[in-house]
Length: 297
Image 1: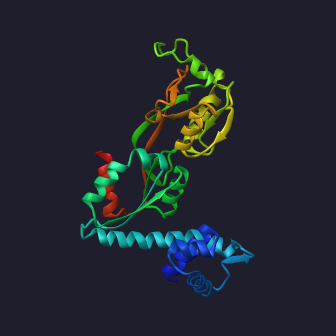
Image 2: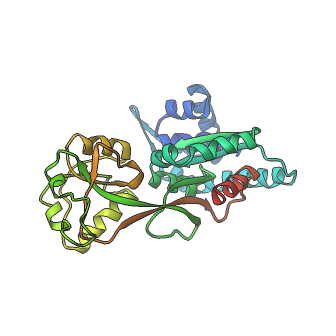
Image 3: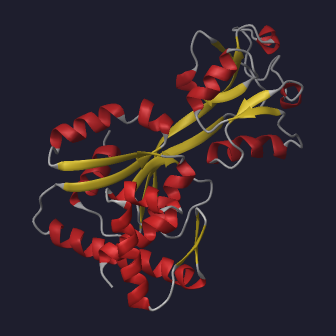
């Protein structure tokens, strides 16, 4: 059972497509099919059901899937451990980040990192934080810099680096903007959460870490958010909010002249940002240097 066949198996299982797996592995589709056929011959059973264009794991394939991930992670850990002995900082670093952090937090850090370590091949993925978490758990990502989950995972080492204050905001011509008074002191003349719920809002997806953090605040007050539109991209949320499609909560650094910050009678809402790695994974020298740079930024 060779690693190339296992890599092809995981790629087809994850993408549910031979053609997309071929693109991911930079192979031809016949080459991927051949590797799967070889693996099926070795294990003595079919691993995928092919019904029209649909690809699904068989029962045997579902049993093999976690074992294949473990085998490939162990092989990769061994390679990294041997490479680390040389002390050189090189090879590939597979790093995921959320779109917002990748646009607003990482650029100067990445520029400095690539200048310091030109031998590192940076394999950067822009993913929702939730998908990045799963990628680190699965072993497809060595590390991620994302919004942190509200509850820790026992298999992950999670380190907070920054805190984003989420601001209640709306367009300058939104009805709620009339309540804004720059001289109003916190807690005096502030809008209530229930008043906000009289107006539609645009929010991060309910299943995102940021979306669940916001929803929890309103749920604790016995309120349900009147969400008219949702998206996982904060830049898109800012646009929708600025054109008057609803009020929203956005990181403080995103508030500009097109938006006004609302004074709301509730404690500040913060979302933690940071990095995560798998506790059972041997980190490459490239990843260790990235962590050092993140922690000293």
